[in-house]
Length: 282
Image (cartoon, rainbow, N blue to C red; front, side, top):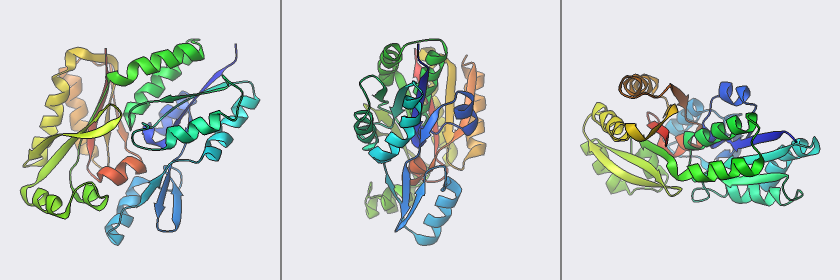
């Protein structure tokens, strides 16, 4: 039986330690400031991205890897006789899955399998880790595909966004909405549903109030949580993320709560001080 190589893209927001531990291949998306192009997580990190946005007042454009990027990433593994399973950013949010599928079509049938995560950030990361564990345990590509596709609707991804500035700059809310939101200190809570991002709550007041709402939303589902792992994902909000981690550990039976940083793509859409809770349901 040939070895299975799990691949994902940089929007999975898994730490380098995790991707190295499970030998997960990574294909970066692009971050473009004008004519300057960077690779997410490789030549551009979130802290630098926020500095550039602060100084320029403009958001970067993000772009999917090209079909050739995927082909070049997959080809060495296929040449070694390995089977590639790629799990990527929701097709509702990006052309990443489409481009990976175009690359897969250049190989013989069965050599590269592309799975739409229907998620973003560590919602993808959770599925990728499940796939890596299954591959380690000897599951076939078809078994892994069925496992992951059966889990996509069970992933809960919810974030609080600290400022409407990035949504405004990105064209996702009007100047008036951004002004009123800033005036009233409104912090949106967004959730991934059917592969797309939707607004679920608007919390008015202090940041702590929004964090408590985020926690309450997650803890309301604690009986349904997969107890293996839960992610607290953040953009330049380590203190708040660690607070959320402690609360989850105290009030649930989840065995491992991991804190991870959002990459440049998620950060460029949500902005600094974003905090999210991501888990799988049983």
